[in-house]
Image 1: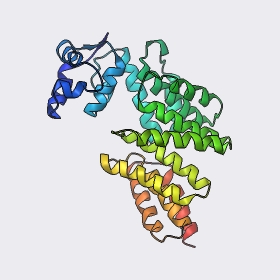
Image 2 (image 1 turned 60 degrees about the vertical axis):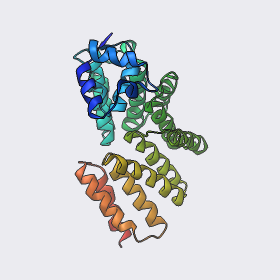
Image 3 (image 1 turned 120 degrees about the vertical axis):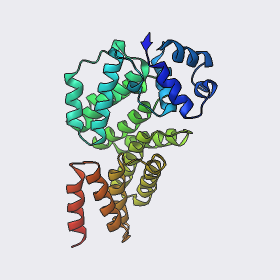
Length: 280
């Protein structure tokens, strides 16, 4: 049994103008929403995660202090570090906090396996062990969640780093198709568009890379978010430059501005180096 703040869920639901039937649609029975709001508990973390997604809040926001809340908070902190490109620090945070896989619901398991995989891949350049964790995330088949899509996309990164480009492209294409099939696309799926654009660019398919960058940027615009926007703008600018489009300089400067706004310690140096080289 998972203890939750039922009153907070009720207030957020009403604030969005949703009935209990609206909130339960494609998630659970209306009676489940009623029980959560009245009795302050939920028996299924996957259902609770889907409810939070509809309300556009984090799972940890509605959990009453518990082991589930502690672990959900750790995973959210790890994901935030990854968004800032601090994968080594994120891996260290995972390694120094005990996460009991046996206590995790399938939704949190998928998130944990994805984060463990991506931090090993980017933070430690471990292209073998990360694949084990990505497969574990993908094996949470009863969970329809974004972390399975992110794991599939990240398999593309791993195989690209291993120079197995055909496999990488297959995973990237599959992940983009999965996103396109979603009616509601969460903001952190813009990582998939960025990763896919990067591979297309590496393969000198600059026009395809631009299309993918623009899809990611559009997602940022829909959410009015700067999350990963600096990387997407940088990738767009690079591909515009390769296509001989003078608009690239303006986009580079936009990427630089957003990177500094996001406190991105890595990207501004890359952008400034590119601008110096390209303006020679």
